[in-house]
Amino acid sequence: MPKGSPISLIELTLSELAQHHNALPNMLDESCTAVIVREAFPKSLMQKACERLSAKELESQLTSPNQGMPGGELLTLGAAATPTMTALNGPKNEIYIESAQHAQEWENLIFGEFSVSAQVAKILAGLNQNKPAQPAPFQDPHLGQWLPFNYRILPPNTQIYSHHDMHYRLPIYDLLADGYNQKKLLSWFITGQEALSGGELIIYGLRSDDPHPPMLANRFVDTEALEKEYYKLNLDLKAGDFLIFNSGLHVHRVSAVQQKQSRITFGGFATFALDQSHMIYWS
Picture 1 (cartoon, rainbow, N blue to C red):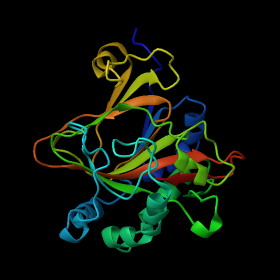
Picture 2: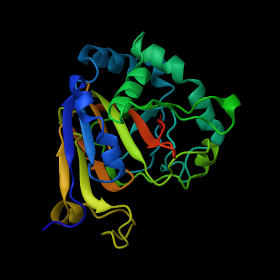
Picture 3: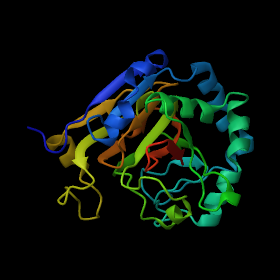
């Protein structure tokens, strides 16, 4: 029998949201691992967005947060509240705040009149008993809201190595308003452009709270052991699909992108208000 926790997946369409209104509460109690909403965003919108993201005028704003990591140098527009090779303790506060101030500008430039953030909020609400969802608020109300999502390009021959997403120990989270569950962390993203080959999200049964994970000498998770010994789920995601999963609990990775087409996603993280009244999401 494989090691770790079994992995459960729900697949649905936008029209079926009402039938799965307990999906995220079930994720909270670990009876559901991942949810895919197929074709949650129009493919034509995704195609135009990816073209705009790749345009010359945005090229200078792209960063490589994992610069120096062989095979892991993705490109991003917008900061993420995560550890990276260039910022092991997460982004500096001022860098993240500046990114958040560009949120609406970037969304308008890349998606035009379509509000991706509003659609994400609608989907999260539909999966969470119709309770509202909103971008995360800063502790200081004068700062407004956190960056709701960022833009990620995984070029050919790059990957995202095995990891989990329990990031609340990072100093950036001191800026988060009180009243939110910092023992649960979900990850979500929209596929803008799938890779022609590779670029799959793989979720493993290895838990973040496992006291004895298989590790390599360099302190990376032993992916070969994960592949051979643990529960796993390979997800085939297409342009316009929305995914949310329990990334704070389950170790996961993105396999190396092959051929010439980059994998492009737009996404971030989410958690619940302690009083269960609503959810928040952020990059």
